[in-house]
Amino acid sequence: MSGEDLNPAATPTECVDIHGDGRWMSLHNHFVSESKDREPDVLFVGDSLIQLMHQFGIWRQLFSPLHCLNFGIGGDATQHVLWRLSNGELDNISPKVVVLWVGTNNHGHTPEQIYGGIMAIIQVIKNKLPDAHTLVLGLLPRGKSPNPLRERNAQVNKLVKEALSSLPHASFYNVDPGFVLSDAFNALHFTTICSSTSPLRTEPRRLNCNS
Image 1 (cartoon, rainbow, N blue to C red):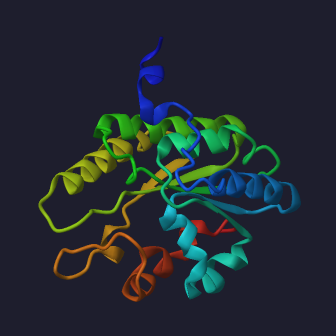
Image 2 (image 1 turned 135 degrees about the horizontal axis):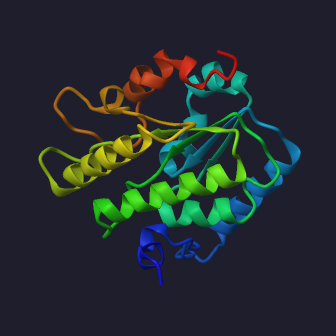
């Protein structure tokens, strides 16, 4: 058994249906259907931070013109995204850019395990979409500093950034400056201040497939 098999963050896993309404699988099936009906230039994949993007004006103003699809599901950890991408969500599309933002929900996993999960997702993307560029957004700090979750996410970012520095068709972008408030507190989810200060708002060229 390989080291990846021993890493729960890098093992494709369906999300446990704790609500009993099948919402996670329903969203996954919806994404698979969307991938058959639409051809995006940019694909966003991840957890609630991705999922909630389309509720804000910046999505309509800056991202919709880029022909984007949003495959975000709240609560997803790396192993859940890995399962989704390995089971149909990438099979019918050929985006030029894949934006990946996941890992903060990997509760109980070490930085090394989360890093391994993110890299496993990138490998699936590369295998299924060899011509796409993968843009990995750094994990946000959590709560008031210092605390273990801030340190964990910072270490994950360091590992991923180092790995992607030498990986073709992949890059890392630190989004901290646009989301951390002046008192060093971060509520993790989008707020009005977040939507107005996001680095992706001021630098949409990072997602411009024609530039």
